[in-house]
Image (cartoon, rainbow, N blue to C red; front, side, top):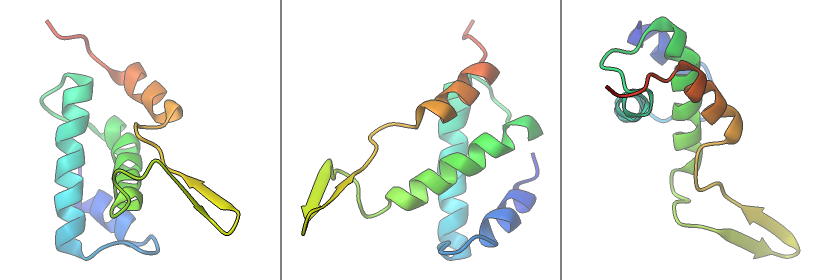
Length: 98
């Protein structure tokens, strides 16, 4: 997997943190994804899942623990887990542990 290619792709998106923070988040997500997939090495086919996990983690930063929020009639609810669509992608690539 080409980490620099993923970093460049993420850096082009609006609102990304500085490169050091982004790399740290990317490495955290790589570890999480390896655990979920039961693999030691991530391949190119996992890059879209990894990018999506990084974006979710960045968007949740600073809002951890918020279940819901109401302000002047506007309600906000945050996800606690990964979205179902992402979990479907992960399950399709998952290897069962031996």
